Image 1 (tube, rainbow, N blue to C red):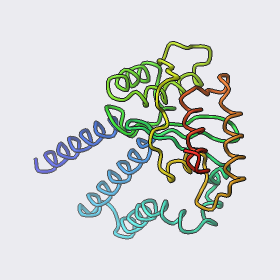
Image 2: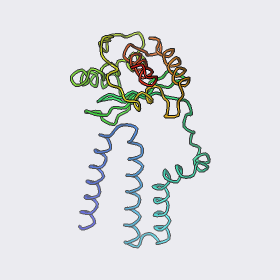
Image 3: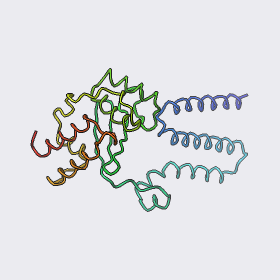
Image 4: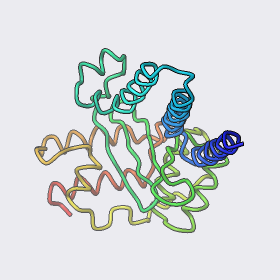
Length: 238
């Protein structure tokens, strides 16, 4: 009877953890499923060892494997050579611009012109836009419309790129003040530069980004205004 109660308790805990994992953004689920699987395996090994069904050496090896798996991300970050041996792709070295609103953070790759986004607030907080389907994006857009006009403009940029040829997602309001009182740090992020950037770097980054803002590449008035404002701030024109 005690073993049955223990088994039911374990099943209940696993079920609750599974429900929590399913509520998380898709890009986090794989890691959480792995952690859960390792945890269940470790509990099973401990149970088998305590009941005499597994030798302690096997339990120790299992515990060591679990520990290594948990420490692996840290080791890969600390030792790039291990990362290459593990077969992970090196992060892209190209420049990218970052534009953030109250609800969204968007990155524009300078080479490809592709937009990547993350939700900062609301029901889909922590989600990557690439993991969201059409219905979820429409729901997010409705939320943005009720909360923040700049977020509507930014999300519309992404939607136009992901669903080319469709124009009904957001209100493209050229009169919207998408520049505002932009700080130098934000202006550098918008142009994908750092504090060492020269005047020439600023001009070149601005020109390259504006070339990527053609409607066929997902550009719009909002992003163009942001980039123009960033250039003005950094060159002392605004």
